[in-house]
Image (tube, rainbow, N blue to C red; front, side, top):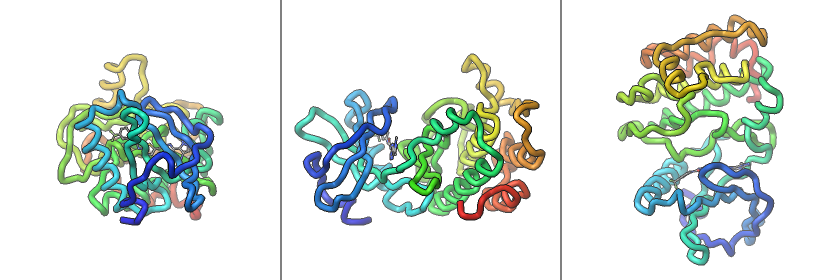
Length: 276
Ligand SMILES: Cn1ncc2ncnc(NCCc3cnc(NC(=O)Nc4cccc(C(F)(F)F)c4)s3)c21
């Protein structure tokens, strides 16, 4: 791990800039580290978030996991610090993603072109192959956790719920929409959960809504368990895209299209921009 991860940081080390976003877990600000002039994002976790014991180990695990991950499509978490002055606040020091949150972009243009969707899916697949190679599963792949870098490249963020595969946890995390059957049924799960979530994401990139969306939680739950996958007539989507999604949203996690096979799928080969 780098010097940044070892140093005891304090709020005085930073000039705070504009707010970047306000998640349910806390606010994020643009910030500049004074000595190096390095631009970062600072996330403040609210005290409501900090059930002392609970969060401390989760934060440590997130920093620990992140300190081993170096990938262009994974947002860096450099470290965190408690701010003694302000009561019980925790600040996360993060890589700054200059083009912000992907879901805002998706809301703005309703859905993405096949080229854009395939390019994003391919870069996410490469990032997940890298994570799985390090026995890390993210478990919370959804638009809210995807940011866009200065060159338009996708960055997976918020490993707050990721785990090393040898200690699988069954706690429910995040919105139901992206959870695969085995997590909704809270049975043992493995890296293939991220393949399911990537399939949900690919569908939402192309149609603007997740595949199992329903008014009631219970209906979403049932649609996921039954893999009730339907492709609307509009917008027009290639059959290659539908074929890929159908090979990822498979109930039996061992039969989902492996990520390295995804990169060879005709839809990805045809539409994904090789630069990523
Ligand atoms: C909006 N935005 N725009 C540009 C930009 N550039 C960078 N970052 C942004 N946003 C922050 C993205 C995050 C990355 N990693 C996170 N990690 C986390 O939030 N972890 C976390 C959560 C809750 C509880 C716990 C704890 F304590 F329990 F462990 C840990 S959040 C940006």
